[in-house]
Image 1: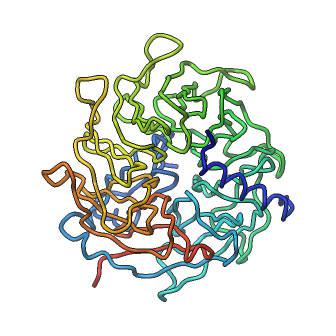
Image 2: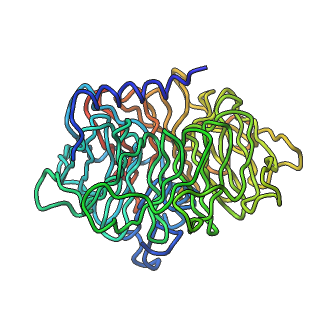
Length: 446
């Protein structure tokens, strides 16, 4: 059975590869940073996919927008990239750091917009880097460097100065890796190392500072997997967790193994392939979705004392799961192929298989919910592939089916990036009429 989303990604990557030649932190595990409470409203960063290396998808510092006023969110300005037939934004969620908002598009352009806009309702990027191969992952920012991967067999991990190059178009990276086929796997930065998955299989660990040369930097080590790794590696407790298309969760030592090729410390077996669902680690538990069986899987992060482990419990998420879970307030939130936000107790239900505590449901035409939800100040934000972005009360509504408390209808039929709420501002990356990359930026109405 061929996963249609993967087929689409590979076709786009191959087309771009053939049409264009390849161009030439606050702590070890917490990349989201903030200053003390009295000043934090202007100093929160969301430096990589789902905010931090553990991928919990939680912004605990948000104190401007909450359930008391989220309904007043209004589109304040939009950032527009280059219009092209490959301009679709696919799974590239915004990173917000150092005064910029970063994301990429299917044409292979990395964009950096001024995070506070340009004083107008329509803004152009502060700078961009044309990498000429599709970007289907979220950038990561650390120590003045922005990292992003490109797709196809000629793909690479790229590292640019996060502030740009002094020009509106940047073509010279600080460094780039050897060829690594990076599709949906967003780079994760932790402890001076950049971890990323490959469609050819394996988890690659690169020195975040590069290799002393601008091109063809080799990894420090590669963690072996039995299938493709399309999700973003999560780092917590000295371990790296990544799912694979062979239906396994892999746990590696984050420091490597003293060799260029490493075997996992342990593997977890799930009921079907793991594609774009990235692991989230919280309170010693690893949560990850499996695609065809539609399950949320919960593993002990320390393993089970054996080489192969089974989940502590699974959650029934419906048709399929290609969304990454977010963990906050004792709950796990994940999108499903049933066009619903599924919400589970983070501790499980005392049984091997658990039903959702409640589900979030939006109006209008229904489509799959592949967007990774994120949580901030009691609100869950998530996109749906019907052109909508939703906000739900993170506590639920007292019923099994809960309606959204806020929504915005975009001009993008495919909203599968993760929304980002920081500093009282909601950022959503998408595509205007399937051809123009767009950054949607919302603030409270005056």
